[in-house]
Amino acid sequence: MGAGAGPALGLEGRAMFRRFIVASAAGMLACLGFGASGRADPSDPVPVTLEGLQQSCDGGEAVDCAALGHLYRRGEEVPQDLSRAIAMFRRGCDLSSGAEEFGSYACHFLAAFYESGEGVPRDLARALQLYEKSCKAGNDDSCSQARVVRLSIGN
Image (tube, rainbow, N blue to C red; front, top):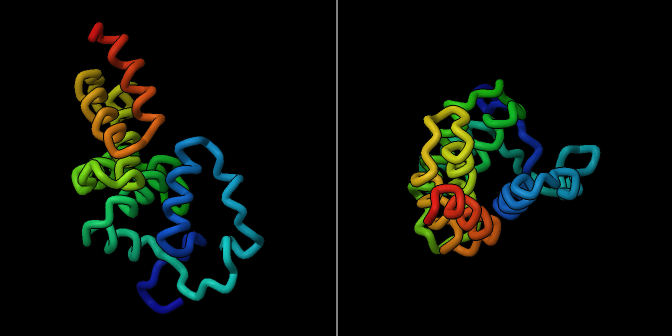
């Protein structure tokens, strides 16, 4: 690893990040099938770094912002930092056009913070907006959660 390259995360390629987001959402990280090398496909030559994810997020890739949000939320490969996680989910949600399901997961996870009040002031109306945005992009979990929040606030 060259200077400044940062630690390899063991997650390779865009498809793996999308699988990571979906699996994380369902609490099924073990289902990703990573081998002993930490890579789903050991022949994949490019190790992904935190810096690479950050550059991709800064470049407008909503799914990579969501992946960063997960790492900071869970304290995986980085110290746990809810403020940073929320910022990454917010950036990913802002980047999500509402038409791309995987990018919309950032909105789903940001909504969960607003719903619970963890790391942000509890705001069910904002949570509902975010769940609905994610739902419109095809995230069925967000559709279900939007119904729950709607009932909670009496809509």
